[in-house]
Image (cartoon, rainbow, N blue to C red; front, side, top):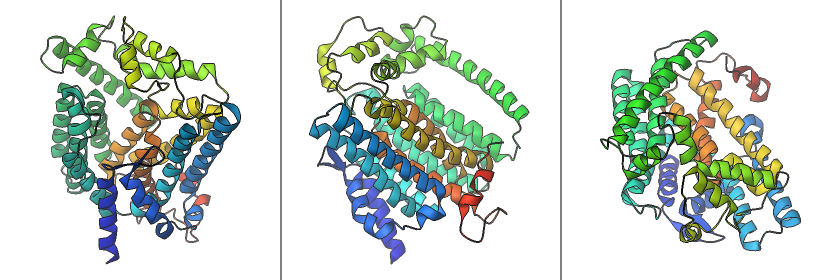
Length: 425
């Protein structure tokens, strides 16, 4: 009965992401599930038994403290904005507390991914308003979930070649339809799974060689991609327009700059108020930072109507920089610590967790997590990072205390052995 109830709760959480409730901003249906589950799910002993779990919760508490200091004592943010900002951090914290307990088995994780895919099939977000956004925000999440399910199935059966073929097809399909970041995720993920899945022991020398070969392979593939887009063979008008306005379209860093101009606007916003930041949901009142984004996109005309359509918030498109913009240096340090802890667990799984049945999923989620922290809006700390982080965290502790490790302690005190295993050597 408890097992069935758990599956129903996971399904409700996944499907609840499609429901928005107007309460202190927008509250997701999945967050209602989390709030109702919290009193019956969280165990205080988790703070002792799982050091990284404790550290992430404490980092979120620190982030909330810095938010309060900036919003109330320094910037004097409006009540509506600071309540929305604080609610986001609190919900991220509660989500970690609950999801760490829920996403604790292979069956639970696979159940969540399945229902997340069903949610994306049945429901369409409001952001989908064009052919490009339809593929990027509707089709790609379905492909990603399906690929995660298939990858685990094939990996457990040792069918690595079939898995590589499927991931390669998914990668090419995304690039052909203007979803470059997802295509890169599949490309890099496939390479890592193939190398590590074959039992190749990574040394510093081998890592250097792999990086060189990978860079050459990437640049070669990128040249073919640029030629195909410029000749209108693949991609849409958005990709073609981006490449044509670059001085050197064969330089991938130029493409990254024009596609992520918000990141450079965020650097300017941080330099303007480096210590305490601009406050929760800070407004770009004179559109100074919006103009910086336009400059990286080579937009000559200033579109005030377009600026108003995005509510004039300071653009950042980065969780790390968004934390600094909203909460100052202290907020950035708190967010960076969350990022650092998750990276240590994720990269440990990538390098040493090949015997785990969910290994290909851990590889893809680790890449997704890094990309999200670097190039996704600050709100992803509330909506995306808790579930990804809890899956990686449970995978890490499964590896650390699994049957294939000799290091697990019998006294239930992982803190004594934790640092020994997270060294990425």
